[in-house]
Image (tube, rainbow, N blue to C red):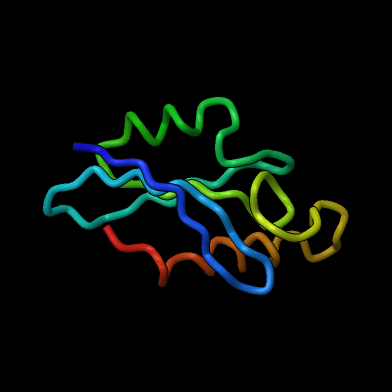
Length: 95
């Protein structure tokens, strides 16, 4: 049975995401990211989370959607910031 839960990960700027837990004994997790600009519920991302056979977490990068902070798209180190945002939630996620 799949459960969907809104998750807020606190930090200097809160990261907000949706955890789709497929249940069962498989504890693997797919991390779904959006493009820039975009957000966690953009176009096909919720459908992708629903159709996957694994649990997933899709989130808003800082400055996007419900997450805190200012958009980083004009920043020269945007890739580094996106990588930080991708790595930051991992210790908080459990299925």
